Amino acid sequence: MKLNGAQYRSVWREPDGAIRIFDQTLLPWRVEILRLTDAHQVAEAISTMRVRGAPLIGAVAAFGLALSLREDASDAAMDATATMLAATRPTAINLRWALDMMLAGLRNQPRDDRVAIAERIAQDIADDDVETNRKIGEHTLPLIQAHAAKPGPVNILTHCNAGWLATVDYGTALSGIFQAHDSGIPVHVWVDETRPRNQGALLTAFELSGHGVAHTIIADNAGGHLMQRGQVDLVIVGTDRVTRNGDVANKIGTYLKALAAKDNGVPFHVACPHSTIDWRIAQGADIPIEERDEREITDVTGQAPDGVIARLRVAAPGSPAANPAFDVTPARLVTSIVTERGVAAASEAGLLGLYPERKAS
Ligand code: MRU
Image (cartoon, rainbow, N blue to C red; front, side, top):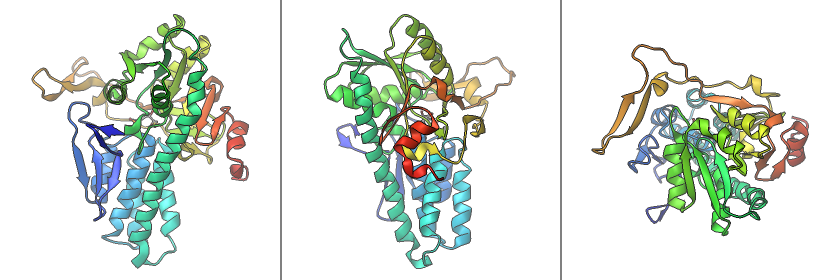
């Protein structure tokens, strides 16, 4: 993606192995690029959500593991670092997937070769994510185009942030929206603010503005009302884990949007790279749901009129809060799952139709 006229990815590696990321806790107010030089800094960046989004945390963790091997390439150190990185966030399977790819490629290799091998695999994971998301966009395009014959723009609702900031580049849910816009289809995006951390209002809106895509930020509770009024043509969201039967974990609140979409006959599409499908889990009820700090509910972070980024309490003093960060949308509410290989029904048969090699697994 382009930022201030320059081409960037959301993560990249420097010749000495250090990793560069955007500090997403400061966006959209300040664009600050961080340099991470050891795996502990990488783990901190993931758990505090300086980097976030399922595919991105997988790629960043892979680079982080590669970085740690420069200090100690023994099996024991490698396993301990992978365990530490995997523990940073539990719901997005991409994190575990990327670390498993790294460990599988490194396990039986001589210690002296491990840094070079790890850096190559991590780079492959990042490059694959970019190409995967570009293809997801290509497969999403006809789903958007199908609504373009009517007067006015195609109105798409999205939840959370599944644009380039959540991936290495392009995004998943937003990839097709960017491609539709670039190909001249008039699109307008309803952006759920996505409490508690407001990834929609802050990050998705920032990305859409940067690309010149028309959009409107709405309260999380507004989607159902807009659907009843015929103001949403389709919903496109990303996902943190899809189970074998097509159940979809995504940012908290996604399930309610899917219910409203079903009730109003609005197609509900899920953009999902191969790295997000968890073939080992049969159904969504078995997905671990991240519980985050209650201060994300009781407080909000924003920019004060004097430009200072500040945190403000918005809840009654002393009241406790609960903060489940993801929910599971059952497959029966999902119209389709869009992957880099094409569009599938949200079911085991649908997914296996695109990934026949997984039949035995
Ligand atoms: O908690 P976050 O900000 O990491 O959650 C991100 C989401 O829920 C995204 O929608 C999801 O990771 C899909 S990203 C392409």
